[in-house]
Length: 252
Image 1 (cartoon, rainbow, N blue to C red):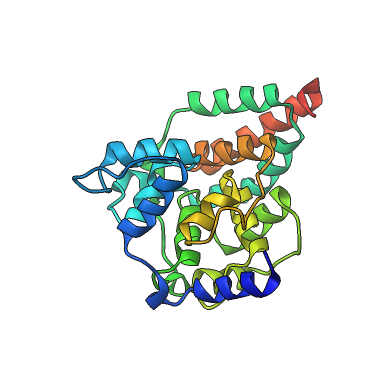
Image 2: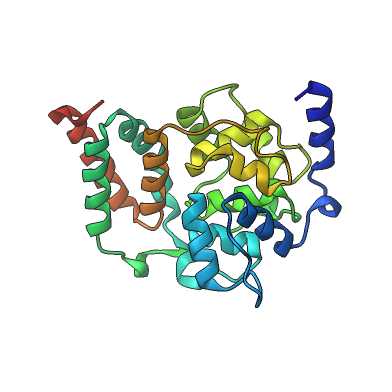
C-alpha cells in the first residue's frame, strides 16, 4: 500500500465525531473480521458480545463500550492507588517465563475481591471525551484502571517505539490527534490483540496493520485485566510475588 493511500485512509478515519459510526456498524466490522454473523435481533446481546470478544481477544466489557451498552456498576469499581504498582508489575511479568506468568495469574484469580474498598472511577474534567476511536480505546484502558500516564508507560514497555507524552495520549483520547499505525500498534500491545482488530474497527483494511503482539505481551495484557479490581495492598503483594518468581528461576 502506498504512503499516499494510507495517509488518505488516515484522513478518512480522522477522529471527529462526525466520522464515528453507529455502534452497529462498529460491531459488524468486528464480526466480519472473525467470520461471525450479527444476530438478527441485534448486535448488543450479552451472549453475542461475549462470544465476539473471545474470538477477537478482547474482554466482553470492551465490546460493551463498542456497543454503547451499559456496563454494570460493579465492574466500574477501582482502587486508583493500586495504579502505583502497574508499571512495576508489567516489567516483572515480562521477565517471567510462560509458566511463571501462569502461576502469577492463578494466584491473582485466587485472591478475594474487596469491593468495599473500591470506588467508582473519578472522571477528571479533561477526561470528558467526544465519541471517537481514540476515546473508545482510552475507555478500554480505563476499564483496566489506567490513565494517560500509565497508557504511555504501558505502551513503551509492551510495544516500544517512539516515546509519547501523556498529553499526546490525551489528544488521541479527545479525538484531536488521528490514530496512526504506530499508535494503533501501541494500543494493540496494551490490550493484547492483533493490530488488525483495531484497524478493522476503524474501517481500515486488516492488511494495513500487521503487528501481532508476542505471546508474553498477550499474557501480560490478560494479567492487567485480572488485577484491575485489586486493592493497592493486593497489587503490591502481586508485584512482590512476580519478583520472587523471577528470582526463583521463572524469569525468562
